[in-house]
Length: 148
Image 1 (cartoon, rainbow, N blue to C red):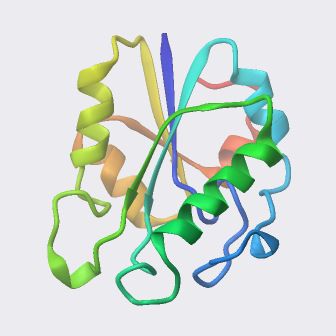
Image 2 (image 1 turned 90 degrees about the horizontal axis):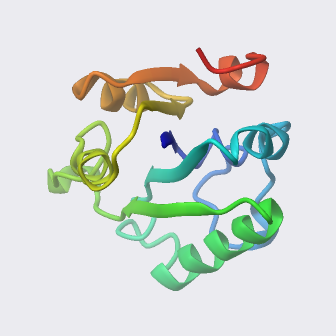
């Protein structure tokens, strides 16, 4: 089994300033096709910082509604697990990227051969490097004919 661990905003969906409603969501161009290509050999995960909840921009209910909408747009692709850090950056929690609580949880729960973290920010890259996992920037991921 192989693992692909994605950031959400800017990676699975286009960046939008603290989206709280489904109509604010657009899939990243080419992501569904790329996920379809790897869906037989990889399990997919999301790890995303969502401090908009603590900042009061949207509720946990809105976050869950958005995730259901993303799941509908990507159907029949499924994420094995979705992990959201809803803490404010000042809370110094162990789950806000680049800290690796959620990544460790995934790695310790699955036997795998290959694992990649795909994202668009330095925090995604630092997350991957913290546990010696290969990082692939989303722009590179979408252009690669095959994963290395």
